[in-house]
Image 1 (cartoon, rainbow, N blue to C red):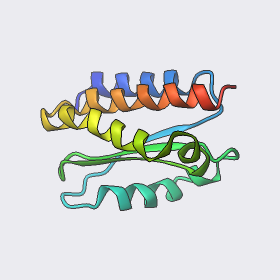
Image 2 (cartoon, one colour):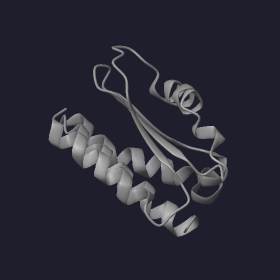
Image 3 (cartoon, rainbow, N blue to C red):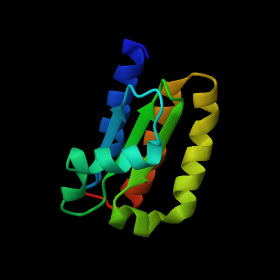
Image 4 (cartoon, one colour):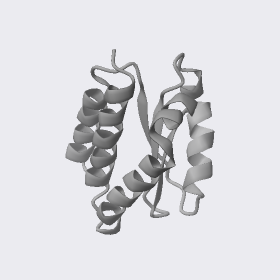
Length: 123
């Protein structure tokens, strides 16, 4: 991933969080083999996202070497958006990952998360 991709992701996180009480994390792991969903749950707790007061945080975990990723959210966010949101978001991001456009995939996921967070958890 390029420095430009990292900058775009950082800016997309800031924009997604603007105007909402929710928080978003993006983690990249170097594992060559990983269950991205299970690792995302572990990282979510390891970085304390589950302690966000309103329980509306989300995490995008990317394991580029394993060619896997996961998008998860805390209990209040999940209660508002439901299973279909997560499935649709992963499906929208998947073509970008397949093409090797990890930055584009993450930014797309961040935009989708931000829209729902602003709708359900405005500041």
